[in-house]
Image 1 (tube, one colour):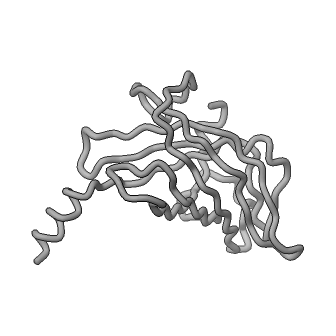
Image 2 (tube, one colour; image 1 turned 90 degrees about the horizontal axis):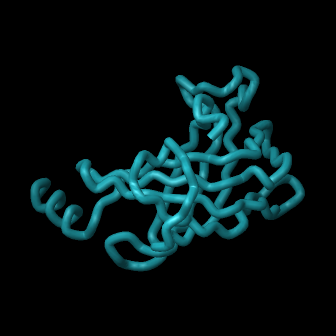
Length: 157
């Protein structure tokens, strides 16, 4: 990725659409805005406003040929994205998003899921003073399987 040094600060909430160790479809809610320590230019989202964007992503088992250092040296799989949506002053708007790739690092506790989605075809998308960059966006999330959650709950009780 040409912009790997300028990764965007994005807070992501992901919820499973079905039950399983790693469900095939996830609802992704992106909360874009300036974060402390961001590598973004100082004028980006300087107002403190947030930009909320939602999409669904299918975590396919199909392998990909995408070469992305962010995902590491593991075998990558295709992340099939639907168009994203946000609500602006003009009502609900669709944003083009292309497929990306994902990996699950199981050698860590908790497991780490990394993925990226391609927003390079989205053009200029802006809401409340926060502009969505027209490039790949990168995401990281902790991943827990059902047994891991049950074990953690047992330790707490």
